[in-house]
Image (cartoon, rainbow, N blue to C red):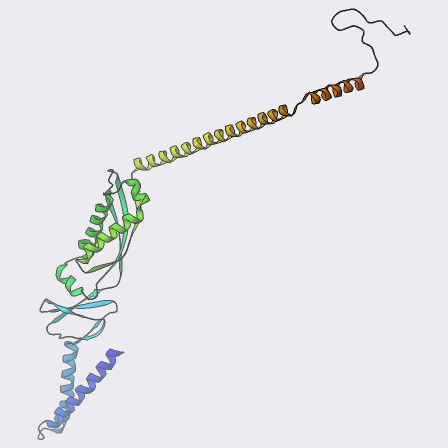
Amino acid sequence: MSLFLLFLFASIFVFGVAQEIGKRVDKDWPSNLKNGVPYLVGGFILLLCYTFNPFYVVEGGHRGVVKKFGAIQTEELKEGLNFTNPFVDTIEQWDVRVFKFETKSSVVSSDIQPVTAISALNYHIDPDKVADLVKIVSGNITQNVIVPAMEESLKTVTAKYAVQDLINKREIVRDEVRSLISKKLAKYYLIVDDYSIVNFDFSDKFTKSVEEKQISEQRSQQAKYELEKVKIDSEQAIARAKAEAEGLRMQKEQITPELLELRRIEMQKAAIDKWNGDVPQYMVGNNTPFINLNTNK
């Protein structure tokens, strides 16, 4: 819409200029020729504007880098409508929005274990330094700058940690790698928005050793549990034995001669209560028979 209005105003201006030129032409010219001069002049000016358009539109989320006769200019074109010199200026648009790049890297841990790391980087070009970047970087930025920075930083950090620490201290490793990448990319006016380690893949040998270690730890934990259970059962048995011994000791302390005599009398009474009236046939200790008191025989 803005371009349409600009073109409309330019057309009105050109037509006005052409009319003024038509008024100043020689009055001796034929009227048809004199009346056609404004249109010829206006058409010529519009043709020049169309052919050598001085207006340039930079898309949203982009910056325009201006080259005058091939020389990169420090001043950049902001997004929107810009005025340029079409005879000497060449414009290159650069995207300054956030890019995401993911890569797979082969690294080695401090304990000489091969590791495959998948990491992802979010970054963008500093919007105020696009021209400076163009001056020092040529070709594909991703392949020439981003990939080397990510791989070098990851290799440097992972070489400081054993494989197990790469797992247990993953967030610390990530932060160290991000810090190194940020420093490397800052030299090229690239800003890191986010960095993450998507995954660590280890060798089959290491994976198997980890599984065996986990099984061994589980067995060790089970053995410790069983040993602790035996210990607790033993302590409980000792406690019960002590309690029973203490009970017997207390009972022994409570036994008196009077209590023993009472228990003897109670036992005799219980025996008498159970006697059915029959006299023993033999005396204990020999075979002498008792007198048979049964007169019915």
